[in-house]
Image 1: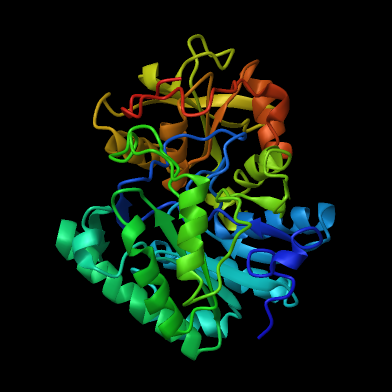
Image 2: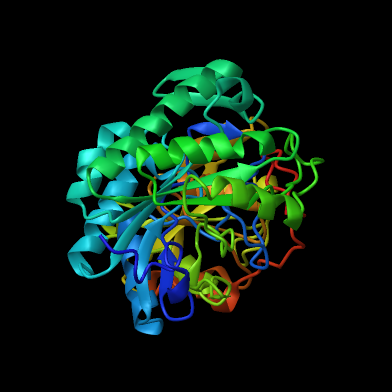
Length: 422
């Protein structure tokens, strides 16, 4: 199988062939000491961040819009913001839909490999052409310095045991992908003082298993992680590591550390340009879901304006179409779960509002917004009259004219405490 038309695998195509990542996989099954998915800034390019999370039917609609606006797109991929195979239902259904509508595209998957082995045959059936496995160590003594835990179903492994199980699954995944004719790239995050001396051994094992490419990615020090204070590798270090690793497997030298919602050319990413389109698609409901979720929850003080913060709202007004068929009216009041509890609070709120297609608030933090979306409840920070917002939501789903969300500095903003800080 050729690598042509995949810009990550073929450097000569980076100026002509685009890619689009469909962010349908929010959950992850391992904890890396360099990863923090809390923050999102459109000016920040790194794995694990996205402006919105999509469901499969939303991802297909987004893909339609991307293909119309960027016809030079040759690759559709799933790379998070968590791990695709920790979200197998969403990932496989998205691939099925994409393959059905765009059979000529290349299909790519990026994973840690932990939960990939059970799905190898299905990935082949769905037409996956390229896969990336992030493998940072092949020695569990080194791996335990990189991974805090790994989850296999309901079993959680920690430190050395986590690294051992993860490495076993990664090796099995690479071998299985290659055996099925899927082109494999291995990503290796270079952490100075932790695994930099071990990169060549990873390359040797990857090459022996049949990987086509290795991508030695410099550590991106991220706030609120165990590796936040570890310095980023120097260009000289990366150059030397690629030289010694290149003896065993071809090296990638043009990586852009793409976001989970990356779109466009590698050298001219358009994720910021498509952010609003992505957000609009994240609010789309299938027809059957529209029928079962007829209402909208509103954070309001007086019942006229959307003017309360998500975290401070103790009672939501539930609105819906007027029985007369003209306009909208308040249906009832509904109490919100008590404050505190972090992620559990937002899961509980999504359950309380399970017959609502959306919740409208004046402001909210990115963490609760993403958690609500993960639990099936789109949340919108808007301003203005309730009825004006409802009219736009029910007619088109586009609330951009009422958007109250303000930009933040990279890595700033929400404390992550789960209290809805804005």
